[in-house]
Length: 196
View 1: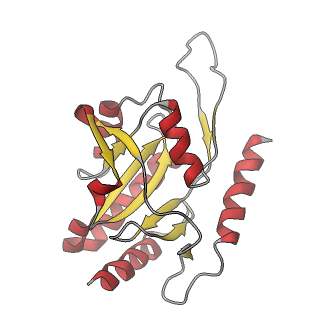
View 2: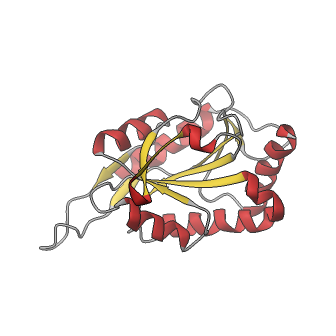
């Protein structure tokens, strides 16, 4: 039932975002989703906020390091987008926010994202910090009951999608996690062209 709700929620957000503009196949969320804003923890005891990404186009994704399928696939796609961008990748940042703050320490999370892209940033925080950011972007997640005797043996059900913010932190596009590398790259390039 919960997985059905997650699928419904993702579909509702995408539908609510409206019809995509002709310039890209991504869902235009300009004016529908809030600006980039958070206070979370990065590796090395560093606190990061949206101010750390000013001037960069941000591809934001919610997931967790122990995710068996969706998260590694999406991270691989985003890293491929960075390769496709070539020199322009310097103006783009992958930000991965964990919805599993119990297991994903900042250092574990950073090691995970760097396995896909050496410049990606992994962020986590307290339960409240993570819940606040997830709520802000309408991301639903639920930690499942542990299986077996190991309390750390569990999965986290979470809604999926890649949020793309422009260099001033405005929400611009929402992509399904199944979106092609070509479409994602075209959308990011559109924003880079607009910022000049």
